[in-house]
Length: 511
Image (cartoon, rainbow, N blue to C red; front, side, top):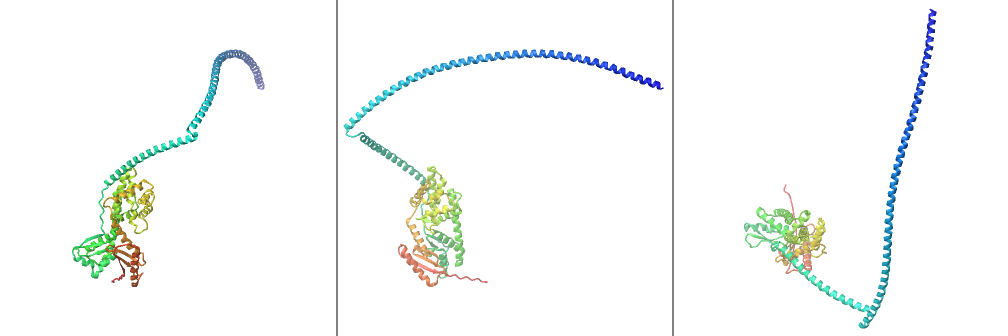
C-alpha cells in the first residue's frame, strides 16, 4: 500500500518535471518566434518611414519650386508696375517743369506789365493834378469846395424829388384810406339798422275808473305819500281821465313804481302796508329783468363765458339813458358795428363785439363810483376776468387811456358812429338827468339822511331822515343847509323846493 503511494508520488513528480521541461521549451520557441517577428516589423517600418520621408521631401521640393516660381512672377509684375509708375512720375515731373517755366515767364510778363501800369498811373495822376490845378484856376475854387457844392446841389435835387414822391404817395395813401374807411363805415352802418332814440321821463298808468284816483290818494293823502316815499317817484294825479302819471329821472325807480302801481290797481287793496309789500316784490322782479336783459344781450351778440356780475351790470344799462339814448341799445349797436368793422379788416370779430358790448359798462354804476365811466367800466372788466385788450378798449374809447391795439380804435369808431347818427341822442335830456342826480347826491351828503328823491322835474327834492339820528328841531336846520348847498354848487333855472320829512314807524302785534 505504501509502495503504491510512493510510486504514485514518484510518477506525479516525474510528470511535473516533464511538463515543466516541455512548457519551457515551448516558451522559448514562442519568444524566438516573437522576436523574429518584431525584427521583421521594425525592418518594414524603417523601410516604410524611409519611403514616406522621400515622398514628403519630394512633395516639399515641388511646393517650394512652385512658390518660388509664383514669387518670381509676382516680383516681376511688381517690378513692371514700379517701372511704369516711375515713367509716369518722370512724365509728370517733366510737365511740372514745363508749367513752372510757363509760370515764371508769366510772372515776368506780369511784373513788366505792373511796372508799365505804375508808370502810366503816375503819368495819369500827374496829368490829373495838372488838370485839377487848371480847373481850380479856372473855377476859382478848390477841389474840396467844388465837391461840397456838387454834393449840396445833388442833395437838394434828391430831397426835392423825394419830397415830391412822398407827397404823391401820401396823397394816394390818404385817398385810399379815406375810401376804404368810408366803405367800411358805410357797410357797418347799413348792416346795423336801429330805431332812433325816444325816451321819456314819465310813465302813464291807465286806471279802470276815475274812482281809483281817490283810493290811490287815500285818506288825507297817506297812500300817495307812502307810495312816493318808498319809490322816490312823483305820482301825479290830475284831470287826465282814467290815468295817472309817474315822473322820475331814474328809469329803474319809475319801472318799479309802474309795476307796483299796476299790481295795486289789480289787487284793489291799497294801503301803506300793501304798498310797501308790492313795491318790494316789484323791485325783485325788476332785478330779474335786469339779469334777463344782460343774458339776452349776450345771446343776441353771440358772446359766451362772461362773469355773472358783469352780466347783471350789463343788464342795468337797460334802464340807463345817455343823452336820451338807451345805454343797452347803444351798447348792442356798438357791438354790431365793431364786429362788422373787425370782419372787414380781417381781425377777430367776436373779440371786437365783446369789447363793443362792454364799452359803456361803467355807466351802470357811475352814480355809485367816482370817476369817468370808461375807467370804471375797465376796472370792472379787469376785476371779473376780461382779457387785457378788452379792458384797454373799454378804458380808451373816449381817449382817457392810450390806444394800444386795433380793437381800441374799432370800438372808439363804432361808439362815435352810434352816437352821431341822426336822432341817436338829445343833449337836453342828459343834462336834465345829471341835474337830478346831482340834487340827490348833494342831499345825501348830509348826515342822518336815509333817502333823497328829486321830483317835479327837478323843481323839488324830498329828503327822508332816520328818526333815531335826528329830532324834529333839526329837520328845519337840515332843509336850510341843503338849500344853501344847492345854491352854492348847482346852476338851475327858477327855484328848487327842499322838503325834509322825519319818518316815524310804529308796529304792534295783536295776540
